[in-house]
Length: 231
Ligand SMILES: [Cu+2]
Image (tube, rainbow, N blue to C red; front, side, top):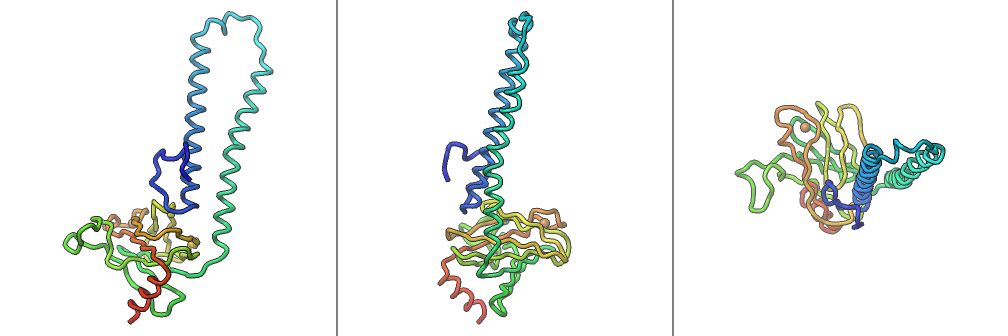
């Protein structure tokens, strides 16, 4: 969804939902900029023009009408994409083909595939001497969370101790992991790739060292990965 409004300060987004959110954010920024410029020009005009203070007769009613209509139009322009995003998100949560339970620990993540018996593992950050060429420092993990693309996946996020947050910037995903609470959201990934994220809730000494690596692959690769892991 490339357009004029895109690209204020969010990362490049890798799914339809995320790019729509990115567009909405940039659109709001554009509106904000427009209002700021308009108000600045208006007030500069009022301050510096001799016309305003010298004119005896000023018609207020028309001005009041404009001051009601313009904010309403701006609110409507925000309401339509905002509500459609909300309903789109609600629809995504209706159905899922695979459930992944994500548990935050001090200081690593563990993943559990509820539909595939026995498939669960811990995911620790790779230290400097474990890294292979090309792998990002402080972001690569020993066991990535592997999921198939074009499949609606339900993530259930919880914590075994303190509050963590499972966040992937480039997918617009950020959900708190709290012990005793199962936060749920569904997501379908339209493209393959490796996406990195970090814990986004201060959780202790090694908070910076519990990254998230999500590997989205084709369904066939995912199947062979499942059997490879379980053997
Ligand atoms: Cu943390």
